[in-house]
Length: 188
Image (tube, rainbow, N blue to C red):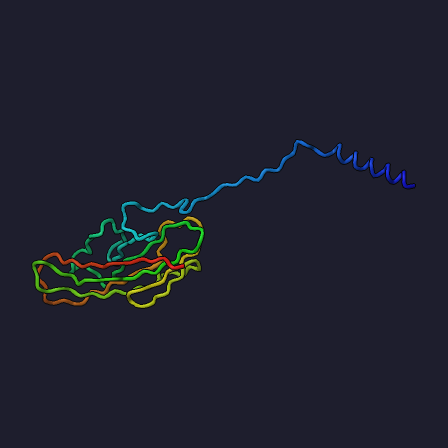
């Protein structure tokens, strides 16, 4: 009986080896996707890291800020709803977490006038809800921004800085300029 079982076992093993195919092979092929793959960040726009700045005037359509010196237009046509929008461009493997601070601000001044125009700023989340974006406003001068990975993102509005110009009755005609200094710091 043992011989019969042994012979049957040998026959089974021999039969299995006949039907196995040595010509089959399983390959595992890998490809690496670099960070920012599929992202088309505008090169001629003012940006801070992965954030591109856009001027939003309610009187006209929003436009990318292409120069660090730009015009808001004329004071008599300027709307009360002004903001600098922060548009996210990126495709990162990990969360994008940054602290954005307004480090300095000057009033609108002119070399031809002793008067100035004061203005206030305040950070606010973008006007939409997105589970991948978290905005924590620390105060008017500082905000924490966290964006979770979601594949290529090309120009998602994630944050805005509202500009509130004060009334200035005593102004000499001319061009007035102000400056805002931003600092971006990565948070881990």
